[in-house]
Image (cartoon, rainbow, N blue to C red):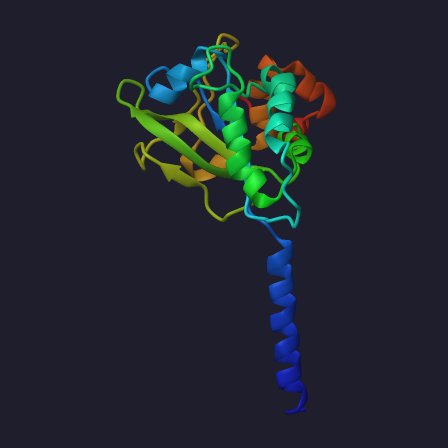
Length: 225
């Protein structure tokens, strides 16, 4: 029995290491068109609903880097940036493709992800595996709420991280032309109410209907206003 205990402990440690290697942290990042923030104002020049900014992951792939990765991501970005609301806020009056190329080189190329696979991940709007990870907010004195201007969905990282705002206030998204009323998200139930299905149905697919056509939402996850 005493001989087996160290072996069992070693087995458990190896198992945990293998699980850690197989698991990866990842997130899809969005900016919302809140005109009272600089980046939100930039986003609103292109969309009144949302701007996708990047996909990132901690997982590193063992892929040889190719000399034409830059050219490939420029071509793919140009094909997809309008359909994804993946706009460049810098040096590209048309919205493409300096920023997209830079994002890929940092968050894709360095992680061993090919341009084709990075775009495949950017266009995957399945709801499974996308929990609310973090938000950036500002406190609105008139409405007494936290207005969300940046949001990320991805792997579960524990509690939702909130940057800025008031710790006592609930949350709202910036207003959009499609809204008849404002949905308030309670701080005590934020992750459950502001889930990816709700965000996809009420924000993303209003601007890009093809996404809900290809990746339907689960109606039971949609919070009523």
